[in-house]
Length: 383
Ligand SMILES: Cc1ncc(COP(=O)(O)O)c(C=O)c1O
Image (tube, rainbow, N blue to C red; front, side, top):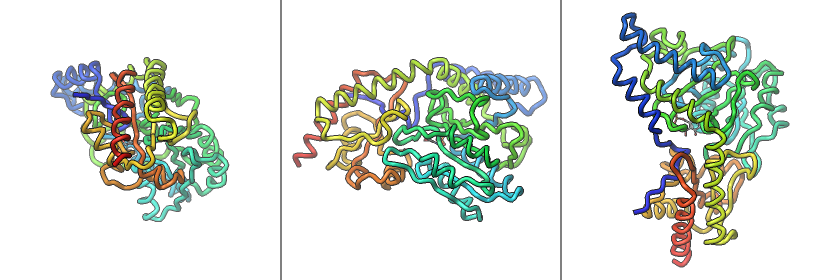
């Protein structure tokens, strides 16, 4: 039976080294980093080592990093925290894009419901915002600008550095959701005009349920979770010591292998596109998203005339795991808000399938998947 996992944008398998780091920390407990005794100090040591390592990888100070429970929590904390703090300075504007993950979009809508003024920047047919539209939207009343680095449905990259400069010019805070881009893009926070950055461990072969939020030194911030004084009073709750240790290990390896990860994923994507062109013909599918400004591990394809659900169900029956968009979007059968914002035709939107690649995948799997897609398309088209 075929078993091909082409859904790495949804979640990735934990790599052996991360599992090892996890087990080592979990088995080495019990350790509550807030406890003063030796067990607690050992736990605090692990968290400190992980934070130092992540800070080196990101080019920031360890004190600027807050561990959270997910990428979604990092996004929520960044936006609620910064928006509330900025309101005290008389700023009530939020600027974001139409293609953000729901962790950002729904948080912005909640802020709008609480009285903030929300501007959602449109995108072109490749899913990119225009810096001039961002420039027109950002002003001295803007509290926070939130633009993702790379899109989770199409892989399209956004001009975050350019928008960050605009935000800085108007003293607005710049938040970047780098959940999909981290591990593929070099994100040097010494250089980039970014004030807040969200990352999630399970997208880079680390564990689920661990996120990271970077808050630039001096940036005002209000916690979202209150309780103990963990994470320098920015996020209460006993740290996930083993998860944090495994996250740091996965991040270190992902960044050390950044260039080879990029070419590995791009190679599989290109092989899938080549094999599909050969087997079903270039006229029977379209690529959704930017063809150059993109992450290598995500490709969004439409097979006009075949619904996403039919294709995904048939792929699953044949042992190929892909997705209809973001995991929550595919579960609810809603048309993708990302492809809708790109103003693609209804047929293209209704027939879109996301393939995403990563550790363990091979070009042989890409060819095998193309064969399976060809068989499914022929069967469904002839019905
Ligand atoms: C771009 C982006 N932001 C945020 C998230 C949410 O991350 P998490 O699953 O860790 O909550 C995801 C997850 O798919 C994502 O792709």
